[in-house]
Amino acid sequence: MRLGQAESISFGNRTAGFGLGEDAPHLFVIGDSQACGVTGCGSDSTKPCTKDTTLNGTPARVYCKVGAHTSEFTAVVPTLGIGRGDTVIIFLGSNDYDSKPDPTPIVRAIEAAGASYLWVGPPAIRGKEGTAPAHLQSVLGDKYFDSRALNLQLRDGIHPTASEFARWRAAVLAEVANKLKSTPTTAVGNSLATLRRPVVVVAAVLGVAAIGGGIYLATRPVRRRLVVVGETRHRVRSARWVKPSHAEMFANGKPIVITKMGRKYTVTVMGHPVVRGSDGKLTFQGRSDVPEGATPEKFTKDDAKHIAHQIGHYMLGLGDFVDTYIEGY
View 1: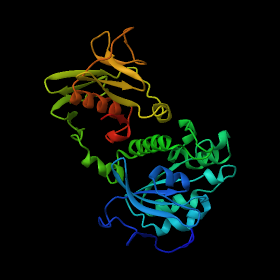
View 2 (view 1 turned 120 degrees about the horizontal axis):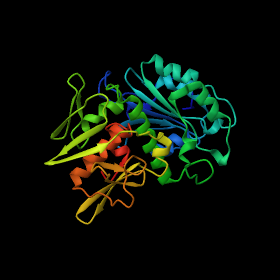
View 3 (view 1 turned 135 degrees about the horizontal axis):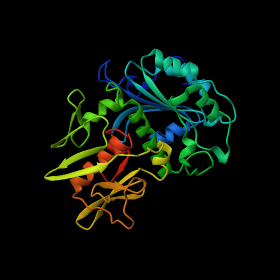
View 4 (view 1 turned 90 degrees about the horizontal axis):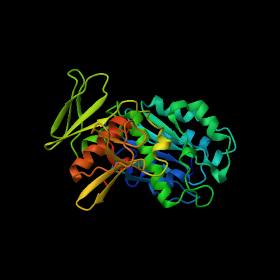
């Protein structure tokens, strides 16, 4: 089958659709060889790769083809079975790097189906600025993810190494979760119910939130958030915090890391350990009231998980999709 034929795309022995019912939300990843690399979908230059897989715990459907240009997907998208509530991640632009590809037919087809999307731009191909990234961003606005900001290591000047593909995937999924976390019908939002830890329940009307077995009052504006873990109460400062961009957060991998230190665990945020501030509250470098020479605070494993999730969810705005932004969870 040639890329661009307007007929139903087959995935194994089934046509497009996850077998979860028409109304079940789906996650689609489509595009060129970059999409193949991010999803581990093998492809050659003669035919597309189609498969069902999981990406950091989220079920996904993949359609990718080596050497594909943006224009070729205009005819493909309507055949994929994309429907209302679905989320589509698009990796296109690497093969149009020095031109101005038109993404509008593709995104209009996705929007007409009632789905949302994130267009993931190419990395810095052969170290060049290129024309496509700036053009795509000007057309797509906040629906465009500029991969050049990640400074991915490219094994051949075009494609990332295996470990960098993994970092790219984590950054993109975190961006999707962040943009769509208020939409529970998306594939990413739907997957939150299957996390290995209790889901955060926020009662906005009462201003009360429950995390695990503890509660705290969420007054507006929230200057400090209290986490209750077992019998231990931890406050993490959130005053005067300027949130970094997603590219800055993921510049060196997942932004939050849990590390075992003897019988206890430490938490680092973008390379900086969580410590006790001068007021006794938890904080980390780059925030206010960090004592000089402060030693990393040590937690039980469960406490470390709660603290890491609290920082990622509330301070970095990364949602509950913890596997995408916490190392060692």
